[in-house]
Structures are given as structure tokens and as C-alpha cells.
Amino acid sequence: MRPMTITEKILAAHADLAEVRPGQIISAKVDMIMANDMAGVIAIDEFHKIKGAKIFDPQKVVIVLDHCTPGRNIADEAFAKKVREFAIEHHTLFYEAGRGGIEHVLLPEQGLARPGQLVIGADSHTCTYGALGLFATGVGSTDTAVAWALGTVWLKVPPTMRIILNGKKRPWVSGKDIILYLLGHLGVDGARYRALEFYGETMNELSVAERLTMANMVIEAGAKNGIFAVDSQTEEYVKATSDQPYMIYRSDPDAEYVQTLEFDLEDIEPQVAFPHLPSNTKPISQVGQIVVDQVVIGSCTNGRIEDLRIAANLLKGKKIYPRVRCIVIPGSQKVYYEALKEGLIDIFIEAECVVSTPMCGPCGGGDMGTLCEGERCLSTTNRNFVGRMGHAKSEVYLASPAVAAATALCGYIAGPDQI
Image 1: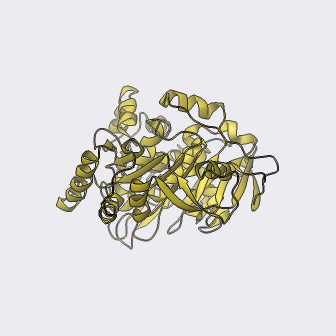
Image 2 (image 1 turned 45 degrees about the vertical axis):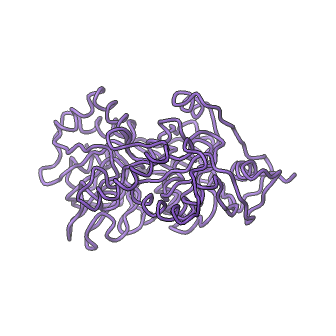
Image 3 (image 1 turned 90 degrees about the vertical axis):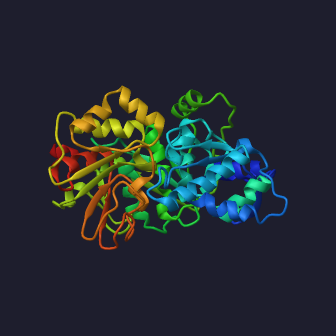
């Protein structure tokens, strides 16, 4: 049998094959299928086109209302209503507004994403879950509908690129800064249809929250999936969120990698992605004083409790800059409640931030911070394409929660060392 990577082993197991090779087309069994209130609408229409279709296993289908819920308008509520009624009718796992949160924060914290699984979702950032040692990738709404009916998905086995991280993090450097730095080197298509496997002596320094942030953004380099080997931190996290079984896969020592890149974390300082690409990055020392109108702290990338703690630590006892609006969006209802119990919400409110219910909000230009012409936003989200948060002539800069909090206080893009 040929030596295989983690990704290849998981795909082989789910295709009932002894081995797989990059480029091979397989039909694989899925452990979980996720859809939200936007992509779910299209998937439902496609599902109804399949004659006699039934959900293959309601306990393996997760539907989350997060993109447009609570709705801005009648159209949003119509989307939510259609998806909600489908979920209830077919007895799927269902998370309503106020009971769930942002899908890619929710599934890991609810123990629905576990090592060794194969998970697909009708959202490109489904790759987030690979931080826990599973294969997770985004698919189209049609593939989602077919998987609902059959419990399988067609996949092409991706070649694996290994990213080796060595050294120790510099002060204020987080998983968000590391992935932005890597995107600056890889570009938006430098890992096209590849599995990005993270490895190195630095793994012990990266919390599970940071790994989730990094896996979340591998799609911005065109990757099929991102994946971290399971270690003691992973197992501690998984056992705290679920009592269900899981499987650990590890790459063989002589597994084949299409490319190996090695980075020293001591070379990385806090990063900022300039408009209009996540790969258009600069270290904070080279940014200059760029005035902003808005700061967003949250999203599926950086809306976890660890992210809110970092921001609150910098904002405590201070006020945000008078002409800036700062919007804080906890990633889930659980995160919101934890932040409330820890006093973080008090800190945000006393700093004069807006605190929103858990939702995707402004990340895709939906709600709670849509930009008008000429406005600039520094955000902890994952994309800054033209018009991503609103007007085509607005600008979005991407950074970590620490840089976001510092920016909210200064009124211009700033590093936490400046506070």
C-alpha cells in the first residue's frame, strides 16, 4: 500500500478503499452535511427535483440560520422561513437564531465536527473544521442536495502541500497573522485544489481557536481543505464538546507532498491585508496611518471567546475613537453568554462599541455594518473583495482582533503595541 497523508487516509476510509491517489475521483460517504439560510434555499430547490428523495440520515444534516437571520427585510425572512420549514419537516439538526450562531463557530463547539470525519457544507469556509483533524470542504448547493439524498459526495483527491511552521510567535502575533502572512506568500491561487497540511514545532503554541482561524482561511489561497494533525490540545477540545467516538489519522513518514514550504514564526509580525485581496498583506510596521470609519470584531474567522478576550483586554477602561464605530459580533450564542459572564460585554459597551447578536452580519455585506461609498473598515473577517461589505468604492482591511481593537481606539490602523 502506498504511504498516504492525513487527507488521503480519511478520503480512502470514507470511499471504502485501501488507498487513494491525488487526482483520483471517488464517491465518499459523508459524516455531516451543513447548509445555511442562503445556500440552503438553492439546495432545497435542487433536492425537490430528485424524484422520491428523502434525507438519508436527519442526524447527519445540520441547518443553521446565520447569514441573514434575524432578517433585515421581508426577503431575508422569506429565505429563513423556507429553510426553517424544510429543516423541521425533515427532522434535521436545526439551529435557529438565538439558539445557535455562526455555522463555522457552532459546529466545532457543539461537537458535531470531530477528528477523522468527512464533512461537507454549502459554504466555502466549511474548511474551518480541518483544524480538528478531519476532512472538511465547501461544496455547491447541488452537491449538498444530492448528499442529503444519498449520503455520499463525489470528490477528486487533492494533492497535499505541507506547511512547516517553526520558531516561537512574537508578541501579539496570532493564528490570524500567520495565515495572512502565508496568504501573502501563496497568493489567492497558490494552493489551488490542494490540501494544506500544517506541521511543525510551533503547533504546541497554537490554540485550537487559532487553528480554526487558520483552517478557515485556506480557501483564500484556493485550497480544497486545510488540516492539522490531532494532538493533546485537539483531544482535550473534542472531549469537552462531545462524547461521541472519533478516529485519529496521521500522515505516513514517507507520504508524498506536492510541495513543502517552511516558515519561521519569528519573521512574522501582526499583519494587515489591504484591499482588495486577502493576500495583499503588509506587516503592521509598514502600514502607516490609514484612517478608518468602522471596525468589526467577530465572524466565523475570529468570533470565538478567545478572540473577544484579546479585544476586551485592549479596550478595557478606554473609549473607542470618537469618529469610529466598532461592531462586536460574538460567533455563537454560547460565546455571547460566556462573554457576558466574564464581563467582556460590559467592557465593550463601556468602550462604546455596538454588540450584536451572533450572525454573519457585515462580513458579506448583509447587515450590521454595511459600508457606503468612500468608507473604510478594518475587520477580523476573511474576505475584502471589491464591494464585499457594501459599496464598490468602500475599502476593507483584514487583521486580527488585537489589531482591530487597537485600530478602534486610535481611529487609524494601529498595532496593539501603540496602545
